[in-house]
Image (cartoon, rainbow, N blue to C red; front, top):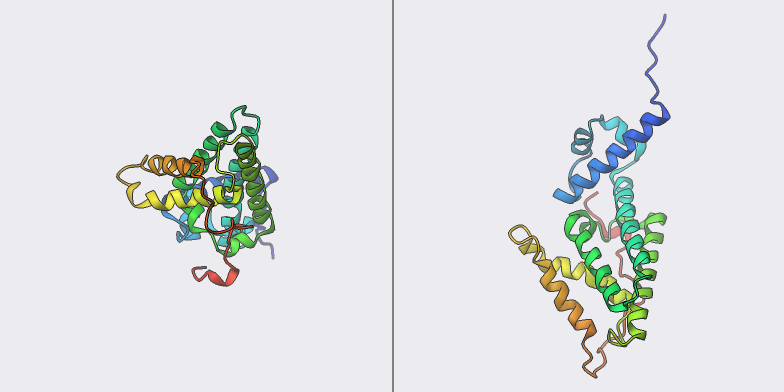
Length: 215
């Protein structure tokens, strides 16, 4: 008795399918948040659900890949800005790029605290983001551009805070976040002579895996 053996995708097909999936997932998560189904992502990519699970064992693994891409984008931007001669302009450009990513991709904020952040590559990327934020902030501190008690972790936390402040306005006023970015930037560059009332956080406060209930 003879049977038909399912065709095994070639390496080039596998690479192409992975790229299609990542692109489709990034757009779908960005537009609608992280609760979209794997089936919807597969349909948008033009592949079957089985293809999704051949590349990613779970939605969390797919989210981790998307997060890694966004974090790498921002880390790359920040690293390039370290060559900018004006430390204040460089820090402002970094914050602008960060909030733009948060505003563009709903999933970026929604995924904070989910188990995808326990992925070692994602955690390493978050550490790199904090390092580049601190490097940019340290340059600005040394030049007297920002308050002496502002840290890179403060700056990284502000990025999400600015997006959340403007979130309810964005459907009607997509650029409203720029107002709150400038308010925040003015806040860290205004020298009042007073110190901040609480020490800066040492790390970004990420939730433990048990905090996620929507897997």
